[in-house]
Length: 406
Ligand code: PLP
Image (cartoon, rainbow, N blue to C red; front, side, top):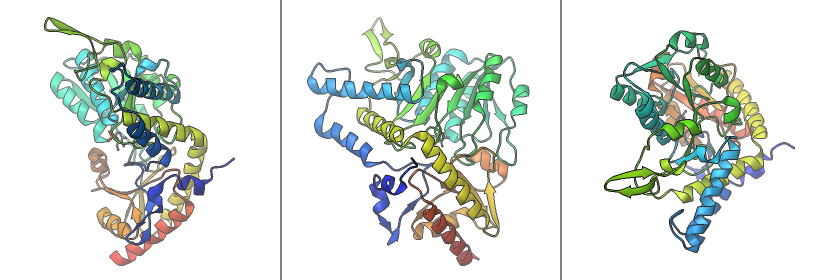
């Protein structure tokens, strides 16, 4: 059975609002998606009915939050098909997950002269932590180039990897181009040369099935708020042998085994990497988001979003002066574009006044903008609640904007 988009839309109360008196069309899902009632309800249930610090108290409420929190670990474990539940670490988001690896793996395994490879199309969150790491360790950051279409130049990877390469950190889907990268092939090439791979799944986890065993990645990161979950929660998956060998990232309560002034020993996985009171309410919200996606069926979501992507792209291409940035053969849910010489901010501002939320600017990917030699783009990013009718109205609004600006 196909998805009933109108009934899905009823789960997202924000969509019922008007903005400047206009029906609201939300096309900024790559920045942050909307949250369904199911997620909001699960979180308010925690605030209304349970309160207790997970893992700490011996009392009823604390046990309830512990059960709820650890249940979500099982859900993530199944959702990404991780081999072991203790390989799932809760963080505040993808950015924190990448920083955890950059500090902790970096501390243990990166030495002077070692090399780390990222791609030209990475989000700043998958560039800057590595820049800081190479500064700390006197290591080297290398960049895998892309083609005009916005695809990785995979053939260059063999030259880039040397005996000094320790890690490749790469996105599965680009937040600007929508390109779906052939990460399985990259991981195979990397492992053949003894190089570890971190996959930034922040823009893929909500659109495509994730299977860390099939990918055989060493690390994988994502954020809850891009997959219909709350802000302030994300995950790091890491292979146990690596996480075991890595030192703690943040220190404090819960991550310890025994503390004394003579020295401290650390808790086992996953708690070694979860210092302090966990954001258990947000974690429970993430669990509800996973249930929500599973109930829809990620395959159906992907199929629907793909049709909508193709449709919207073809309609946009009918506009005079339209330049799509990123025309990879394998794409999902993101369309970046420029029209003639019009500045992307101007288009975004006019669209906003007409009730359309799009993103404009460099999308936290300044090196990619420099590569294309552009100041930024207008970005339309899709989610399961977007409709073909919204896409038609968006295209008409863009045409009107161009007329007004010309
Ligand atoms: N990686 C990619 C590809 C992203 O698109 C983003 C956010 O847009 C991030 C990482 C960082 O995510 P967060 O800000 O939720 O930590």
